[in-house]
Amino acid sequence: MGFGGISIWQLLIILAVVLLIFGSGKLKSLGSDLGASLKGFKKAVKEESKDEDKNE
Image 1 (cartoon, helix red, strand yellow):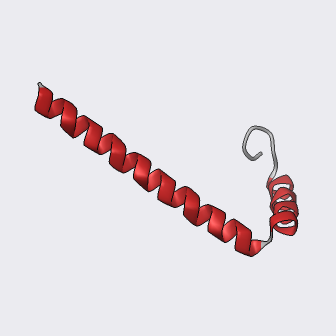
Image 2 (image 1 turned 135 degrees about the vertical axis):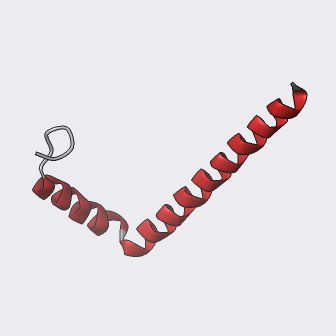
Image 3 (image 1 turned 90 degrees about the vertical axis):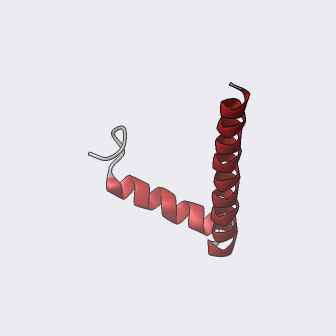
């Protein structure tokens, strides 16, 4: 059993369809953009907590 009742074969089929639709180059750039946005979000959260500590 996989994630929420989805088997590994169903996940592989979904991955294959996504690769066919978007292509590997588009997925690579999408992944790097997502990683950069998560890194920026984490940085903003850390800065916000530092600002709150200074105010107290």
